[in-house]
Length: 381
Image 1: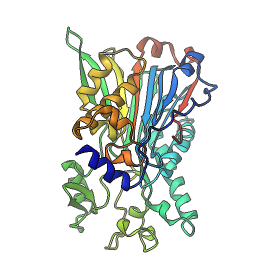
Image 2: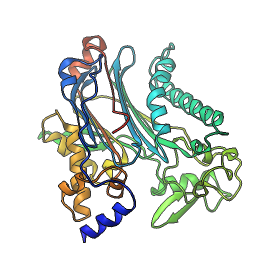
Image 3: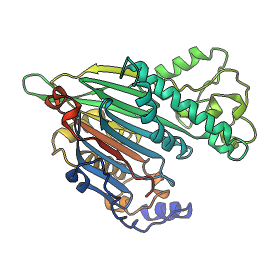
Image 4: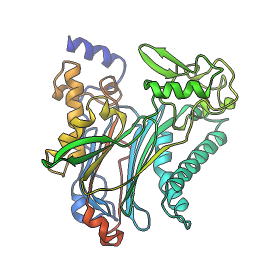
């Protein structure tokens, strides 16, 4: 049965040979030597086992399924901002995710440079500036590259400034806190982010309230709720074709076109932002694209992190998700790992994970105690 499935998918395109392991990328000059040594790649998997930042320790990993890779991640830790962690999950292409990876940090640094410093409003302004810059790029390339109007990205950003954690989200990536409760110190999961996915009843109600004159604002297709029957997420960076009718014309692919005219944006780029004063019982935060949460529950993920050593935590979570993806398809994990990018997307999505282990003592001492850190996932596999 499995052999027949693999032959069918192979006919759809892609290779079945094991992807050759690429040499590790050059060490980031802003990272310490021990952290650089823990970076590696194995086929479609990239990871950074552990690195020290101003907020504690971080572990990051990414596995590719799409061709080209649509996920990106970014970590930056330095005064005066503190620590920024970003998971960018692109759709219909990689351009929006890579743009956000390039531009969210500098726009946030600029927005937070005022007298107010790092605030929810500064983060919101950074999202708005990044969105405006990407839409400007769509406009400038409309004559030569109209497909750029159909590219978008979910954006999950965490910022630890002093002893406050901000979590901002567009789309359906997720941030989950692992915290200790009770005298026994049991670890429990607490979801910090709000997701914008039409499969959520609250999101559908929000869309219907915003578009009372459009009975087709959400539609159930093949058992999945989608905005205008096209896309699952209701908020994103990019997706200009659902934000301005001038980009929804015959110049884009038919599957993206909306048949009815619209005068106001169907999708939004307004992030949901929460802030939290970190407590001693707050142990770590998992930031991950939806590819992880398709296969692991919040509690399963925090228990995997809690019950193992810190180094390699992000990679360990990805491997647990891939093992579950293989189990669902009644195949061996080793067989799944032999499948190359593009064909791999039939089995799982790109998956990006960042785990931040909170060091409360370090936060109390301030940012100056730790050298600056900058990590960006590999652009291509």
